[in-house]
Image (cartoon, rainbow, N blue to C red; front, side, top):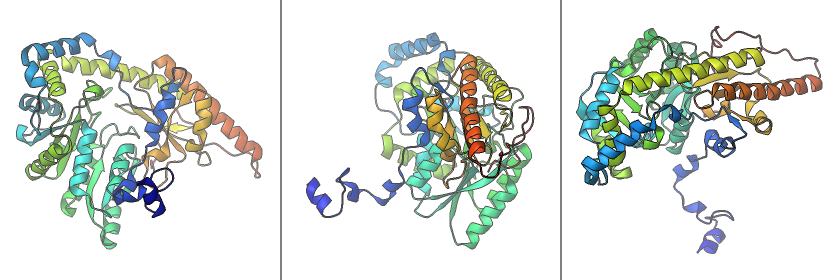
Length: 440
């Protein structure tokens, strides 16, 4: 059968079923972040690439005790199929979590998913047809871009600056797509401690962007994994706190508890919620009853707010270590100074290419994520995302020092072979200054 497929032109030498895939399968590709995991997991490599939470800061007794109580008191239920919408008690507790960001909602409008990325995939499945347009910040979350592409949608990147997505750029994208007869299905945004840029959308812009989308009939998909992980002042309330019918909100326990449970949620308007439940049941039948009940028990018995505060302290220390190391070892570069979350967005001189530098960096035993991973159009070549969430402060400092060896070697090489003389690097700055005026 394989030979016949190959002979008829349906397959190829590597995959005899190539010609049988749906057209949308062409959009499935390994992200640059995932491709780095195998290398970054080597113990000798300092990984500043992946956004892995520092789960060791979570006392394991808290989780073990919750697991034991669940199995002793609810074992048969925990090991059985459950509801496609999620455990009712956990959905009520999720309301308490969202209330910390100003959200008031009904428990019936919460749908539990297998991580918030699963929620993102379900929303995309419900809304996206081939050729549709998704508006998203530039840069944007790498796997979101992959998901949109897998549904044959077009991701258009809206410019950002140090205050987040720029409303005027959003207006321009909406106008140009309407003029071209293209359908904009939603705006995908990470307004708080953005991945990868690290910036936070200002309160004034939150209001303005919601007004724009409301007047244009554009749904807002708010992704908020990091909102409770602030380092100083609490950030502005979530977009969903201002708008209920026009915002679909995605949340997760991956960053404030542990990603291994794979539990996230969607808060959606009633009509969308009903379709999400059906889509959830079609995809996974039901999210894990065991994981949900363990998290519910944890929220009921542990000081989960205090644990989140512990995580804040851990990540604050790591961020400060990274910015200090960047200031010492790479003072001629520019970078963002996040007020929370996991990431620093670094801008290289225009003539450097972070993707081409990566093999040299791995040779020097340091890994990062090239900026091109966060764009659907090839932009971001002179950017890189550095994650400070997982390595120790000492490892972060070592990683940045190794990275400086790579960057300076590239600069020396370009200067040596430049026909026009020495190339001037971008002006340096301390980490207390603002990021570049436009993150595109």
